[in-house]
Image: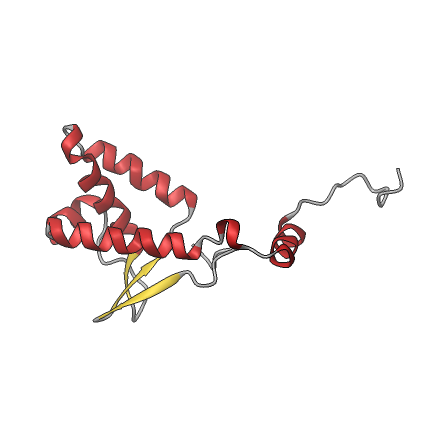
Length: 127
């Protein structure tokens, strides 16, 4: 994902050469679907989904390449505790980066202005 439209930053450093980055809506959906495929029973759902999310969000700081190829590789490469800790950290970062209701009126108007689709009627609003 490129720079988020609303987020002030789209990645955080974990130190030791790794970053967590925000994911696009599509990437989150893909992680959920992959997690569902890996899940054999309901007790595994959160672990598998979080591993798949981290496979997309966890990158090397130096070259921004993924640490894991997919959710299965993340499950094989991390402990349950690491997955839980990093996914909680990603969720907190995602919440912090989501401006939600904390936008000022001026910031909201700027977002609306920059993200609106302009009509293609050709009458410049006078029709």
